[in-house]
Image (cartoon, rainbow, N blue to C red; front, side, top):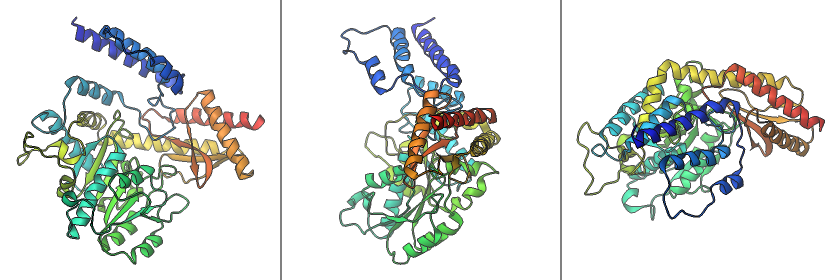
Length: 467
């Protein structure tokens, strides 16, 4: 056996061992300080054996790894990195392709073309939309909003790509008060500012109040960008696209939808009613490393106006080949030239699951979320704060007590849950109070896993209450 074959087999053995142990382990054994100590050594003067390096890497890293691939990881909206996607990603690393253009990486460019077509199909978005394969929803929002910024200013007679924002017409940005923080970051990166936006009031589920939009639009004239949401990060709530998008369009606004996980409701007959009308927007951001279960990092920036997308993102240089009719350069749709060939893992997961498999996966996660809520709300002292519309739950413990006392008990219960290590869940703030947030996004989270998780949460709460 060659040295390369032996090395790759050893890496595969270590990777498989980690994945097979994940369902039985739910929290890291090492925190950051312990992980830092494990790796902290002087830079070696002499090199080391290849296999020894990989074995040491696994030994030192694994105690500090979260088991996000396990069925009871509910801390953030993170998919399970399905083995098929991981295997495709192994090959992507081994192939070492730079997915910048169609000449440097013909297969990588081609597979993105097909995967993009499949994504638009399964998400029920306009088939002529362009798709950029980015790191995740943060950069997807950035990319889409860059296209939006350029296009609304172009219509006002200003070339933002050539002239920048110095002296440009002012852009009004409308955004819900409970939008995800990464959207505000994208606005900051684009020079639009995260504080100069018009924040729209929201309801108890974090959905924009359509009446507030009508009031906010009344004085607006000139370039305008509106940002809506498919799947609020705490509640799973969806903005009312049927009512909001036409009203915003009447004002000439570019409508962008942050759909990091919620846009995948489009793929399910049971849940697509939540996102009804979303296809009328101008751009959409979503992730593959959530419900599509691709490995990190993988997100999609989708833009109805392909030319506006390319204007905002194309990187040109004399040494780079030009794309001819029928060819596609991946770098024309993302803010990177050199980058990973993310299309391979996306193609593999879409091919493996198919339309029916993706719908079944989403339906299973949402059913497990409902089951979790049903079991938890039977326990006196546990209060579910949101409508379980999709896959997100937020709850408080001892909510019948004073707010500060309930906050303290909620924090203590979260700590106890982590200490017990049957699952991993995270805390958050909602309407200024402490909550436990559960995100069900893993292909392995079955009804049995949901019941086990609910029992563990209840046991932790009872233990804290007795204490």
